[in-house]
Image (cartoon, rainbow, N blue to C red; front, side, top):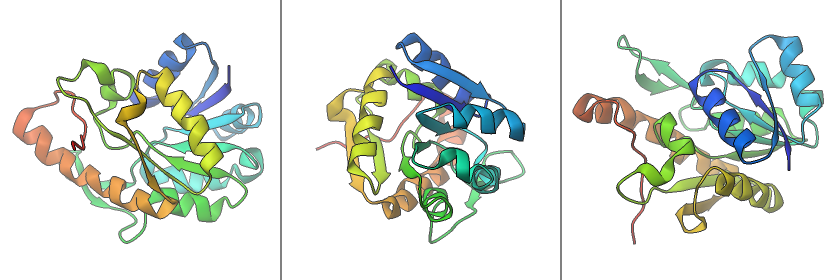
Length: 198
């Protein structure tokens, strides 16, 4: 059992929290209130960033002390939304939110994952018609191993997990968000994920 703080109580954070509770973890969900988020992060072994990506860097940098020595699982994408509310461009072109977080939080082990799919797939990967792929990016092998365990608890099979290497590789998976509006316009809000087939 891991003590987990989920920062963000929207569809993503709420869904992850429910699934991780069901898997036997101790989970606290914190909204955007700074004091609540700080208390939750302070008491957790692992923190999940499920806050809206556009404000994540500022929000998490304010929690530097609470996040010291912890694993931060970043599932957010930092985008500017278009008029239809769907992602239109990246806030950190040539970089990524995960890289920015790792730079701002040098004593925290950032792992990027679960950001290349529509949110229901995060906790119901096996419901898709084909096997999806979930990617991991981060500098710390031990932290990524812990996150692999959490992904397994969420229903992801080991063979569906692909370690892309260092945190810099997150810029590739974050850029995948630019597929999303086009896929949604083409096929609606049906759950989907990126799948790498060999």
